[in-house]
Image (cartoon, rainbow, N blue to C red; front, side, top):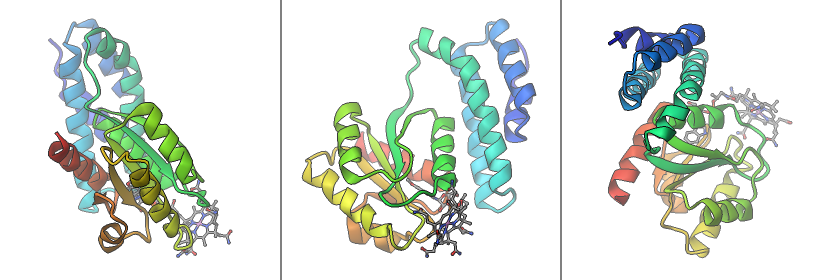
Length: 211
Ligand code: B1M
């Protein structure tokens, strides 16, 4: 049985080649897919904590998330074959009028790293598109991102539209540079996360309370 510590280290340091090779070696050595996945998720959690403590910054987190993504692509067929399901289905998008997606993509990557099935609607997503996507995919969580003070009202419009469509079984998390916990409370969102690592913690907390 190969030592999986180097795989975790390769993800933490964003070494894509090593991460993919070590994932393949673990698969070839018949390490159970769940065990390999657990090592990857723990590594990404560690990356998230370091980011929160400002021990690493956005570029390091991005390259770690990319290493995770590529390793996951190698592992995915085994997870499917083993019947290992993502822990939750989530939808994310940047709200109407807003084209910023770097932070939103980072949140999506961290959610993938936490073994969530992420449906990314992209940027400039009108409220009705979120409603349609929730009706179609029935996610447990919806994430709304906004980077402009002028597009923050689109968060409220989207939250209102989701609630009006009676889809509030899906919990709503909001975030983005101008967004605050106070604003989340004001618009009736279920959670607010100041950064991508916290978005994982908040999502897990909301999923636990929804269960
Ligand atoms: Co824009 N822009 N921009 N911009 N831009 C800002 C946001 C701005 C602060 C710059 C400034 O003036 N100092 C300013 C907003 C001012 C305001 O509203 N208060 C601004 C402006 C004004 C504009 C335009 C209006 C400029 C113009 O055309 N006159 C225009 C608007 C276009 C539009 O959206 N309709 C515009 C355009 C652009 C570019 C296209 C050039 C480009 C975006 C490219 C892209 O995203 N693909 C761009 C960029 C890059 C920026 C800055 C420089 C960087 C944003 C970024 O990616 N940060 C930004 C200034 C700045 O922040 N220094 C700025 C890095 C990213 C990792 O952080 O997105 O905050 P962030 O995400 C964080 C958290 O916020 C959180 O987690 C992430 C990771 O930790 N988070 C979530 C984000 N979403 C979350 C969702 C969650 C939870 C957490 O749950 C779902």
